[in-house]
Image (cartoon, rainbow, N blue to C red; front, side, top):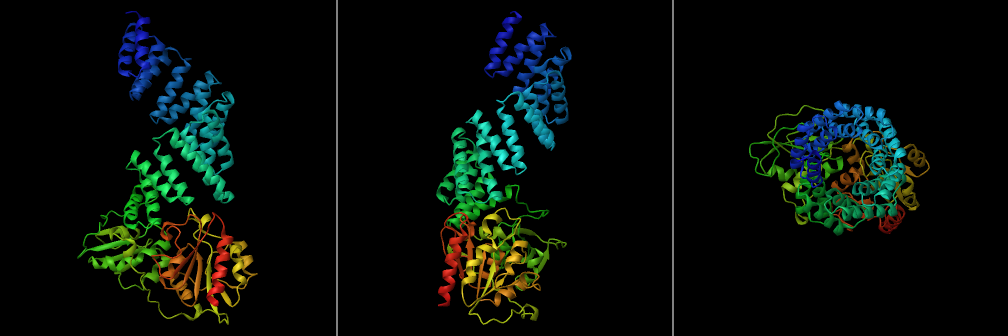
Length: 553
């Protein structure tokens, strides 16, 4: 068979994806013509098609050694080196290619990706922009520029690049997903925008239509639907994602939040255990086995919290149940909670994260206790009563002739990813000060400069400077008639103390306050005031103001 016939046969195999057969035929040609650079390059391509990267690299290098200006072989070599994670060599390969052919858009595009991986952001942008200057149809370059600007929180520019990529290829699922993500991300800077949220949902849905096997698009769609209050639709999205990949932890945890918000606690907390397989959660340096809920007679259990202060206060109620399993309990907690939790009788020892841990046999997170105890709506334990010591004189509230003493908290942990949603401005609270016979007390320890200035112009008692931790805050709350707060640790502390607690909730609030309820199965003294539209604190404050007037009457 002639070289031409062999080449035709090999190319047919190659096009059909029959790489092993193509490799055999190309090999016959090279045996006859060892300096046939085109066939050496083809051998590299079919080797890579079979995942044999080192063989592919060797074939490309052989072709280049015979023909140093062989652009296609150099480009393919760069791609193979990149796939082999030989990043520096791949960069050098593309750079040399561009010296030979300065208008090679593909080389600039791939070079931009490698610079991004190396965190050489300026070089990455320059390379990608050069790629689209040479070839305005470089879809991947527009997409990758979008990714660069998204990572830098430059949402407007990222959106523009994703839109350009989608103009060139409307069926680009990753661009659809990331455009939706950027629209969601943008509201953290520009404020809540319902129209943008709806656009994001539309892009996620389009991504699942373009690629019905796109697991990430399904669970991201689920997150966005929950944010808009479409819980049932979100559950369907998570379930579709899990049909594609039953081991995807983000789909499981999203499904957990949806189920918990509807009151399906046992199933929801079971799903929530998948959080340990996400990058956000870790048991730290603990090497002891995780407790599975079995009896612990004669053993010591370390309890800890991987989440916030409010979560610890909410879940500390499970201590009696753990004690019933026969364990000696050591609690690891954050310093602001140590003195408060020391008032509980169930603990052998309390340590903070900064202290050396004592010996123990098994460990568990407080947030896993509802799952381990198989908690349902009807079996939620009551909050534990804290036995507070005598009220220190420096924490006694000033005398007031007002009928009601009301504590206010309006800002949560600024590091919480949803703080921009769940917190309000002090100015949002101003209508409450129109209520007569109410003495307001700030429970807000950290203040912005704007809040500080506004506080000076309103009839509110500032936060007691002698209040150092949650035990001190508990003493303050005990002296109040009512606490009005956004979803923060203050809400959990006040409700645990049995104080009437009005919680101001954003539209897509946390799972623990459930969906559309005005009360809470976790706390009997809680009343929930919910936004009816995303970002609408005005209506919430009007309802609270009316309720304040009603309880006085």
